[in-house]
Length: 156
Ligand code: FES
Image (cartoon, rainbow, N blue to C red; front, side):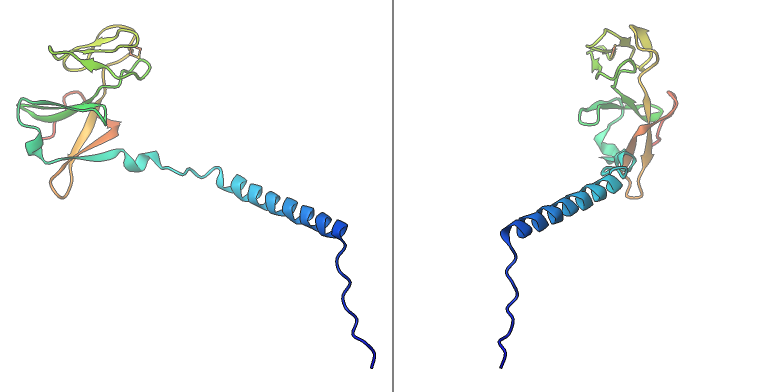
């Protein structure tokens, strides 16, 4: 009975050559997948521009509430609620609010009055009033990317 032929072991040099080729192919496929995925953003900035601020009781009439994480001030005057961005319209620094209610930008010295209008400095336009609305659950919602008119108020 003739003996079975054993497969010849792969020579070390061929094994290393095949390993290098397969490694190169895998690296190319991974790079191609990454290149295909690159134009797709991992974060959709529009999706988180609307933020719930809580219920109206958080902002009593006559109050000025600073929400530093959002860089906004929320005011409640006789006409209703309104929100003002404290981001300077010059180059985007955060303007600080003084005790008298005016805003001063620490970067290049722009000054804004209590309503956000430019009083001095290089800022080209007023601080942006932000759109407020009511969520179905009754909470106040601010859209940090939607600007509204300076006279706009949310009646609560
Ligand atoms: S960034 Fe505010 S004045 Fe320049």
